[in-house]
Image 1: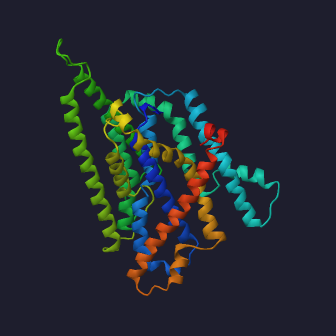
Image 2 (image 1 turned 90 degrees about the horizontal axis):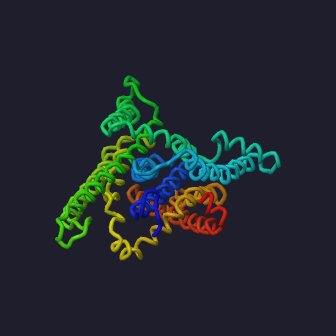
Image 3 (image 1 turned 45 degrees about the horizontal axis):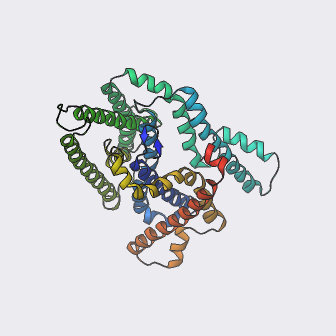
Length: 401
């Protein structure tokens, strides 16, 4: 059985990784198209584009929630040597191996020629964070990895309620306050740095891990309450497991319904009410949606708890594991195909939409949604094929991907 950071590999994490990676690709397909498109044709589709962005910007927060859930797990011991040699090294190598060529390509395009000195220039650009825009996440996660061992020591001391209090302050200062300032069109409300929201997502993952540890401990304690001579083994508490499964099933439905209601509200606010405020990953509704989606996927420790169930479910888990293993490489390479389509082939969803000669805005919305989906699938397919090939290279598979 493939092991995760803190026990049997959990399928819901692979599912979330895959879905978040697909959302990242769709987001960059959309933002890349608007970056190279004449702004004069975009306004009539602005509400639709904002709605699509609302539906995909939970992707990066989900990655951070997963990292917090795994690395900040109170039962997981991580020392600085392990963190640096295994995890930080992987991210640093990815930054260099992909960031330098991406930065060099920008120099080549700008000068329309190649010079040997472009290599050290590209290296300098990469080290200072001036490579392709999607690489910013790697710098962020590298920083979080570096502070994780110290953060875990702090979290061991702090009671959970104090961590929740800190998270509440961050949410109000880095998300709600900036949102209210935009709504009120003023800067009268004090705010915290927007970047604080990334720390918030990381800590949210920690809370899910803490909750899971407590559920597991409660299940184990319940399972040990067995009378001698009863013929039952310690840990075989069917009543406890049945009640826990029912509660977790109900909770899953609640989280999923809440996420669906929030998504519907976000779409209607754009389409019907014309709500046009745009924020990044600190948009309050994005924060809520990311947490709800993670909660809907999380199974409170039940995923992987029973070995027999795991073996029976193995045929369903393996495809998700394989797809999840490709997600990091897909994230790294997918902008290559977005740029090839948009900047070299010079075809975007908007250029195709113009050629379709759509007469009504409503029909244009429908066609644009279809085109975004098609472009996303094309980029995703090409990036996945490339990721699969790259992972066949032993050194890349072992140390980077």
